[in-house]
Image (cartoon, rainbow, N blue to C red; front, side, top):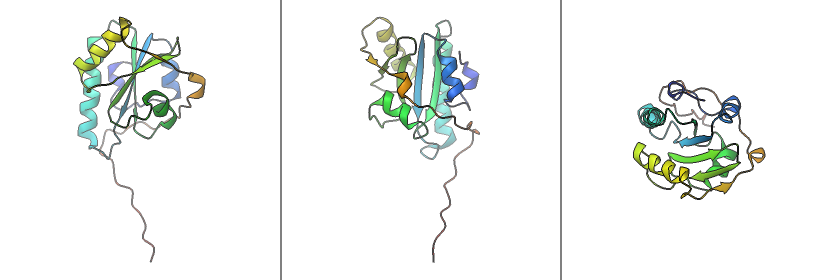
Length: 154
């Protein structure tokens, strides 16, 4: 299971997904691209995830995150076209089902979502995990992103 200390710089990767299969529920979060808010905004999002992990530390949950655009197959499968970030989906790897969260991003709204999910009041959708390609990604260095430099043709 992922621990809260890994949130700072460990986005979802192949090894990370394999680790999630041990948990009963995996909370997948797609965060905005680093150029859409910078390190400060990302650290606030990851701080919320840390608070959530602490609140549910006794539950067999795991948590992963990915930068918007870095895992297109995962985003398409879990978010069904939602482009509002941060976006959250709960995945039951053993049952092959998931539920995208609709609502604001925060400890309380996510907690309410999880409560509805655990009580069977939140609808879930089948997920064919074999059809979701997950690519290895580089760890985030914790810094603001840099705009790519484009060469001008003369």
